Length: 198
Image (cartoon, rainbow, N blue to C red; front, side, top):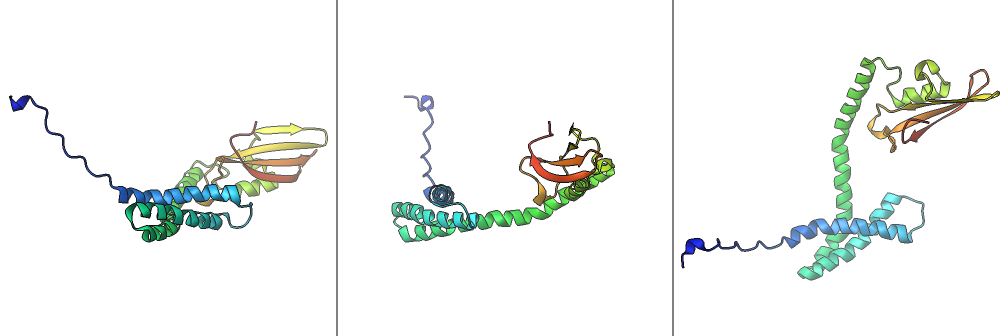
């Protein structure tokens, strides 16, 4: 038989890197299990982050011991399971710390661009202050206005720029001001909103 007609030999399969996979799976599973345990068992209150890490530590011991039982190194893997949630949290905190100067530089750039465009308000502090004073000169025309004989409600939105610690989860802020009949501000509030006010 002509060997050139035969298919090439199949390369031997590489072994699955179970140990490397377990090193990543144990902390992920521990943190996920800690979330579930915290929600199912613990009452709200206290330091949620610390409690989550403690629940994750307990789950990590069990998950690590299970993984270690398969490799005949139960105690080593149980210790790794206990430490893994804290190591993961430390890595995330370190990454946030390293990224902070970059985020600050980006915020500085966005603020400088805003001022170069000669916009009246370029920071959350300026928006807060203008809202508290109901300063229509700085805030401009309200996106929403409703008046009665005795009072008016005006609303403005602010979509940035924001500093890293100020970014609202919904993406923008809304200033709501209630005035008397002459337009003098009586009370104001700033809150996060999903988009411009209707």
